[in-house]
Length: 270
Ligand SMILES: NC(=O)c1ccc[n+]([C@@H]2O[C@H](COP(=O)([O-])OP(=O)(O)OC[C@H]3O[C@@H](n4cnc5c(N)ncnc54)[C@H](O)[C@@H]3O)[C@@H](O)[C@H]2O)c1
Image 1 (cartoon, rainbow, N blue to C red):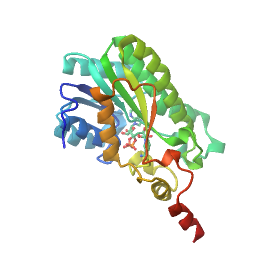
Image 2 (cartoon, rainbow, N blue to C red):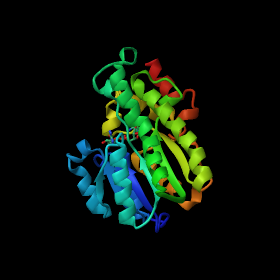
Image 3 (cartoon, rainbow, N blue to C red):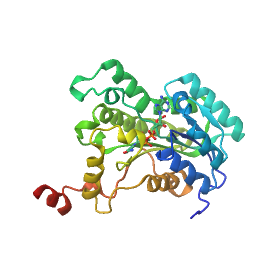
């Protein structure tokens, strides 16, 4: 159902890889709610060609940008502001990648070269995006920026490995830049801490199926789906949440405040 919550709003959505991506689902929901969109992803991800299907559905141009390249980001914001004939009202940062996890290197044997890239892609890219917009004054007053994160930033999930550190840094960047952009232009910056969700990035974590099942059994309302995460993003991009900023918002069916549930105890007893 559409409420026209984003009528007249213009936004950039990073990270739609395929139809399982949270960014993909968010682009569809934003379009339904009346927003105009520019899609972006890393050049290597674009080669898969899937994003063009989404672009057609939501009538959006696609601009390739490696989120670790200031030149790419500048070009992206130039193209987006030209396309919109003005500034941007919202940005979704839905970008994550761990080189060490991908190469099978555990937390106690990190390759620091890979680690730097992981932190740059998964966390400092938010700073790079915000800095680019800041320098170009490309985000409109009362704009809203959302980045996606995971509770491993606060609690230990061993197989999430270096991504836990990346998410802690990402959440910190959202708070720190949230101060500056809030005082300058009332732009709000938040992170959504989402339940485990079956996507390409999610499935990279070792034992992901067990992980998803455990979280579901630990959450009074169950795991939040990618579609529900898209709904939450829409609410944060809308004018209904204008005073929410610098927050890490748990979107996890209650998981973050649970100690244990009978469902998990029952499973352990067997
Ligand atoms: N899936 C989960 O369980 C889960 C849970 C909580 C948070 N998140 C976060 O949600 C976000 C989106 O992930 P997803 O689950 O939709 O998976 P996904 O694999 O569909 O999306 C990750 C995206 O990051 C992009 N990306 C990687 N390197 C990039 C670069 N250098 N420049 C630009 N883009 C780059 C990929 O191309 C891809 O589109 C990530 O930040 C992820 O950590 C996911």
